[in-house]
Structure formats: C-alpha cells, structure tokens
Length: 206
Ligand SMILES: [Ca+2]
Ligand SMILES: [Ca+2]
Ligand SMILES: [Ca+2]
Image 1: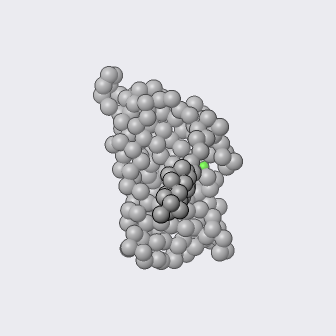
Image 2: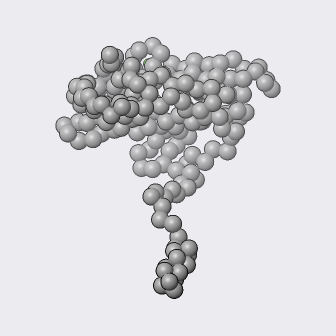
Image 3: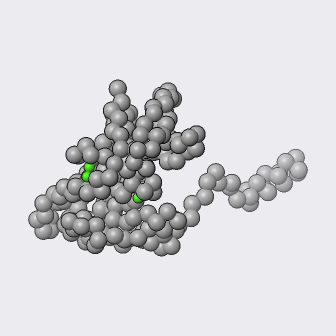
C-alpha cells in the first residue's frame, strides 16, 4: 500500500508529456504585426512554392508578408501595388482566382465605421502560369502535390481564414510552369484519388 501511495505521489509531480510543443517565433519570423487583427490567410501569392501571409486589420493597414523560404517573412505591403494595405476598417479578406488565370486575387471586406471605406478587389498580375489549382474539392480535403514521387507541397481545403471570410473550395499551389506533378487527394471520408496535373493547369474535380 505504501509503495502504491509513493508511486501516486510521484506521478503528481511528473510534468505532463505534451504530444506537441509550440514556440513563439513571431518576432524572429518578422510577422509580429500589432494591428487589431480580424483574419490571416496563408496563400502563395507569387508562385514560388512558399505560402505567404496576408493579415486583415480592423483599423490600421493590412499587411502582406512574402515568405523568404527560410522561416522568415518580409513585409511587401508597400511594394505590392494597388495599395493592398486597404487602410479601412477591414472586417475580413479572402483569396481566390476570380478571373481564372491561375493566380490568386484578393477581396477585402471593409466596414463603414468609423470612416466609410469601400470593399476592394485586387487582381494579381503574376500571370506566369506558375500555379496549379484544384477546384471543386470538399472542405476538409487534404492534397499532397508530388514531383516524381517526392512530396513538394501540401494543402488542406479550409472553409474560413477569419471573420467575414469564406474561402473557395480550392487547393492552390505555386509550382514550375509546365512541370508535371501528381496530386494525391484525401477527402474527409478517407477516400483517396490521384490526379496528374501540370503547372499552369486549372482542374475542376467532379
Ligand atoms: Ca510565395
Ligand atoms: Ca487570378
Ligand atoms: Ca492574374
């Protein structure tokens, strides 16, 4: 009995083993934006394989950060053109390829208080076919893009990137234009499907 009690007391002082551990790297990564955030979207806006980050702020400027590919981001809001900072009372934003040319465009939803500001649609002028889009997927689907058997990128089709933001059910990848890839799709019910795709192609799933 004394032995059992000793083990029980010992267990009380053993720190729990966490399945995963998180480390705050916001400052080191260059994305410690201090705005009143309403949403954040990860999407590869320039087709270089690395997902970039757009932060919607309720008051103050929105921010576009390009992924450097080494764990850091750089603020390119001022150089992105067309004023993607959208200085309004932003409630949410969403990326989607609204003109079906392969690159993701941006729509920003602004509130009318305290200052009136219209919503904004920004077309992406990348226009180099360095993207693959798989449209018509189920929300919750996971897509692994492989090149010659090697995993290149993964995406999960999510339904939202913040307040007032509903993403289209599309998996979007930045790739080499013209290169051949295999997309391995796993739907929420566990079914899998392989689809051969090429850089610059937009595939509409049944
Ligand atoms: Ca990128
Ligand atoms: Ca587009
Ligand atoms: Ca475009």
